[in-house]
Length: 231
Image 1: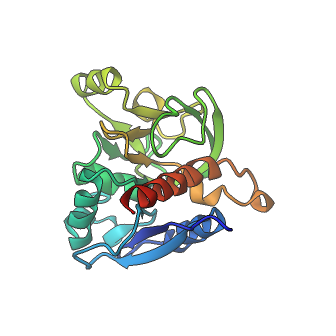
Image 2: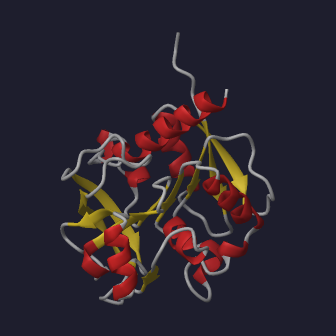
């Protein structure tokens, strides 16, 4: 008997352009993606959520600053508060920070230029729901493509995040000036993860490094476990 494929929502905002890529990656790694329009006030019966990359609302004001007010984000907040696994990729990470679901802010790259290339990130935590397929110290090759990806937190907040072990990924070749090389952070509970690199673009080995599968497959595992727990 084949293993049940969990359903995972991919929230689509005006300007999202990696929603179909995220859906493809989910399907390739054993899940059934469900595209959810940003105007929906409730999520369908899903066991995981991805906020994809792109340029929601044209990145006006600040990246993610308008998308945080989308009706779907209230539903995402409730889902996260209930322990559901939520993955924010690039613009999705920015939206999660703007919505207060993750700490810190994403600022313009140090170079003030858009960057698009493979980068190396080191796994700092492998015990979260979104990194369970990884090992601590593992290096993943995953592409970035952003203009505002420099993560920042004031010193007091950063010290708190270190104490609570919320730094999940760090760059080994910092491409954007992110504070302390931070590439990804999680919520206190560990069920919400945001990262600037694009794991959905590093799943098919025919196209290059497939290290992003470690992250996407971890989400699929978490969603499957959630479905089983709720049966």
